[in-house]
Amino acid sequence: MSATTTSPLNTVEATSDTTRRAGLFAPLRWEVRKLRAQYRAKAVLLGAVVLPIIIVVVIHGQSRPPKDTLFGRFATVNGFALALLVLGFAAQWVIPLLTAVVAGDIFASEDQHGTWKTVLTRSTSRGSLFWAKTLTTAGFAVLVLVVLATATIASSVLIVGHQPLIGLSGQTIPATEALRLVALSWAVMLPPMLGFTCLAILLSVWSRNPAVGIAAPVVIGMVMQLVGAVGGVEAIRPFLLTTPFEAWHGLFADPRFTGPLSQGLLTSAAWCALSLGAAFAMLRRRDITGG
Image (cartoon, rainbow, N blue to C red):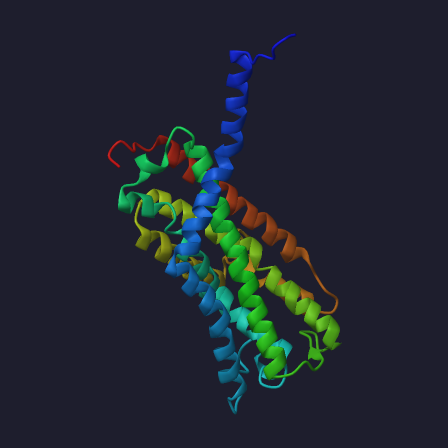
């Protein structure tokens, strides 16, 4: 009769594998739990549901449509046009603000409460915690955009109507195709929204101040909007993080052009990579012995 034994080497390897497997998922679960308990995050999601409905009702009740805006001429009589009008307004500062509320605070709050030494235990490395927080904020950004888009499109169609849409070239777009294009236009907001999420993470790590992490991305977005509207800056305009927010315009032209979509995706990816790379480098070099 032989006994089954476990060598110390196998025990060490099993322990290492378990630590590696738990290295990301354990802090990720904890960050998601903390986010679910935040009243700020709940308020953002509630606002993403309620505010679009209020805006739709107010615009629909106006006697004069906002003709000086894109699709504003038909906003009071066409639900798809109204959803695109709200999209154009939200892209200017609402979307950066909604994502920065969480992303700009998620690292700085640890400095504010002096909890870095508590969260950085032996089983959680700085890298694991960094990516857990990053994935949590990215997931929240996706959720906010889905909720905001759904509330806007649904309320616009139900309150105003789902008539065929007049495109930017004067062509008539059937209701079914218009719904698909409007939903796609809102989805196009995700890459630059994630870009602002990563920028807020960088500012949160750098400043160690939640107020800076939340407010600075919004201010930077406004500055980019102003710079992009000034003449003579065509050379730098494609590299601004706010430019991809306008990429959906080509979907409603005839013929359609998708070049800005590809350019916007590359621009957003570059901002994400540079922001996260700088934030991670700062966090790795940070001295946390004081808290």
